[in-house]
Length: 294
Image (cartoon, rainbow, N blue to C red; front, side):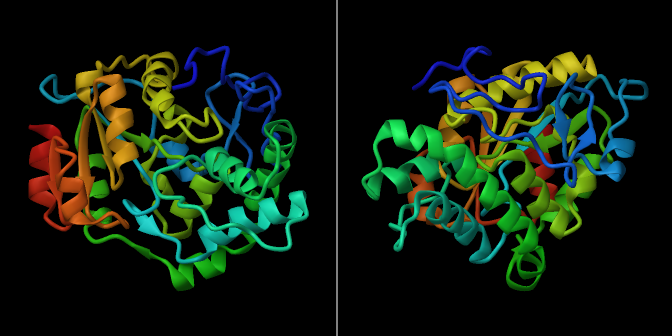
């Protein structure tokens, strides 16, 4: 596993993310950027989300204190083919590929996926480091333009809106994203289905923060403590995901994990991983709340 130290992948004053190898993701475009609580970082937080995620802990029950970290693809929703196509088009365009190698994307970060495509295509690590940020920039624009297709061809996973609403109404619970998507892509996907208001994007952790998913949970814990003055122990954090990589990042940080069989891996394969809890989907709101809040 690569170093997870802040110096390895940190948000800089220009709004970029620095990869350990030295390449930098381009700053978010003005179309996505709204000022967040992180100095110098422009986070695509919707105005509604900002209003709902007010700071302070007044009125909370002392019995409930949870940080719920949601994976996006396969857990909250499916984008249909447009999600894969955005990364493939971005990589092909900047690398001049006439044919894009097929790689597994499930549970991986966007920078990791682009790096794997380039490696299979025969691009050297040095060349890849220079191409990755440009490829991700193209992918971001392509996905944003494909938003109508996300709505038409994708869907929200069963039970997700009800669980999000119930957690949002529970004092002492904060919800954000922990995903391999770069932050602008994560916002586009959840906002396409009207889910953005449930999440405090500024305290989340994304593929644009670090290409190694196992580094993301500590980043989210640090951000919620720094930005919201709300300190969570790892045992108060729950990852909700659909892949082995979601479980790995939870275990690396000492957090809990619920896996749902709504992605590509299937309940049989997920069951062999022995997560804290395994569900077919999130349609039984009461059961999900008992797991997360019990």
